[in-house]
Every structure is written in structure tokens, then in C-alpha cells.
Length: 129
Length: 129
DNA sequence: GTGCGTGCAAACCGTTTGCAATCGG
DNA sequence: CCGATTGCAAACGGTTTGCACGCAC
Image (cartoon, rainbow over all chains, first blue to last red; front, side, top):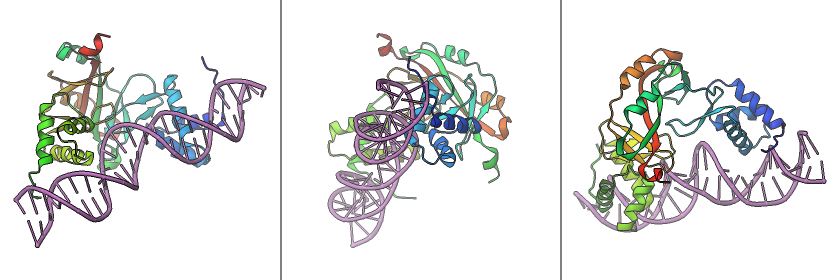
């Protein structure tokens, strides 16, 4: 196991990310970090977020829209995505995931063992237009 | 409304796409088309698929993994994705989509009006490894 | 003949990587 | 000191776009 260093960049990215509550993409984190620490490299932000995700400190969300988002909350929960602006929010609702997966077992020779549920809607801001 | 022309490229892309039953991505269609008609441009394949999707002749699937897939079947149904190789297959199971969406209504100021369900598993081929 | 559709190459966007310089332990 | 980490720039992969040419109508 690699021994990790406590670098300035790591602290800043972590601080900035934790202060954001909008499930940012790597690029969004990069832009936010730039305001505090303009010298940072985009590659570093990507590397640090990827590392945090691998260590289980943050959750990488693979949503239907293009780019991955990062979530401070690591426990399983669901998300709603705004179809207008792409904003992401948590949805604390119970979904019978396993039941869904079970109901689909056996199709096409696939061993189905999970599923991905994502809600779609319009966020508060976009509703005003 | 634009008047559409019946070009050779359009016929070939359509033929090749219809003969594929694996929910191909644009790139996969491009590669398949190249075998019949090596001169075709990748841009043309992208344009033709996008056009077909817009006209409702095919369905564009936005899955969790990176690239969009195209489906000959345009009616709503679900898909299972192989976590090993990315293969996609249809799943003809009933999901109470609307119910799910309803159960989530009201969260975070979002107007939730739909959801996206995608199954995950291992395809027949990959199970043999 | 007119203008839609095509091919090509370049641009795009988010992301990753090779490498040399740097800085933490 | 030594190697983990960074910055930079280039490369990447999938997709889109500007433009001049050519083909369908």
C-alpha cells in the first residue's frame, strides 16, 4: 500500500469539494479550486478526485448525462437530474433495487445482479422559466 | 420541414444498422458500415444516426457507460448492461416507472417527472471466464 | 441548376498520461 | 535523500462542425 502525502493541493481540493453541495463534476471542482489557488493543474484535480473515489472517501456518480459527478455522501442513495441544466440533487426515497434486479433475472442469458435508478425532472431554478 | 434525400449512404447505414442486434454505438455502426462501403465518413454515420433518432426511427440510449447506443426498437423498454464487456441487451420486464417517480416527488424543489432504470449484470459470454 | 448531403480535417470537451521538476516525510 | 506528487503539454476517444465539392432531385 502506497504511503500518501499530505500536500497543499490535496488539502485545498478536499476543502473546496466539501464546501460544494451540488454534486460537482471534476471540472466544476477545478474551477472552484482555481479561485483559491489559481496555480493548480486540472490534472491534479482529476487525480485527487479519482484517488478519493478509489479510497471510498467520495462517491463517483455515473449518471446518464456525460460527465461523472462526485458526491460527499458515500452511502447508497438516489439522485435526480434536471433535464434543463443538469443540476443534481439527492433523493432520499426507498427503491426496491434488489427486487427490481430479481424480477429481471434470467433474461438473455445475463446474470443480472443490480440496477441503476436515476430520477429526471426540473430543478427549482429552471421551473421559473 | 426539410425535404430529405434518399442517398446511398443513408440506405447503407440503415441496412447495416438494422442487421445488427447488439444496440451498437455510432462507432460500432461506423465500423460495420466500413466493411461494405469503406469510403464512408465517420461524420456521415454520426449525422445519419442522429437524424434517425430525431425522427423517431431509432431510439438513442443514454446509458451509464460513456457512449450512446442506438436501438431499433423505439417503444419504451429496459436494458441490461454487462459490467465486463459493456454488451447491452433488452429486458422485457415491467417496471413501475411512474410509481417510482411519484414516490420521489417533492424532493429538493425538483419537479420529478420520470426516471431511468438500467440493469447491471454479466453477459453469457463473460460468465464463462 | 439548386441546395441538401457528403467527405475531410480540424475543433471540441472531458479526461488521461508521460515526463521532468519539486516538495513532503 | 528519495520517491510520491505536481504541472505542463500532448494525447486520447467519442463526437461535432466549417467548408468546399458533388450528387439527388
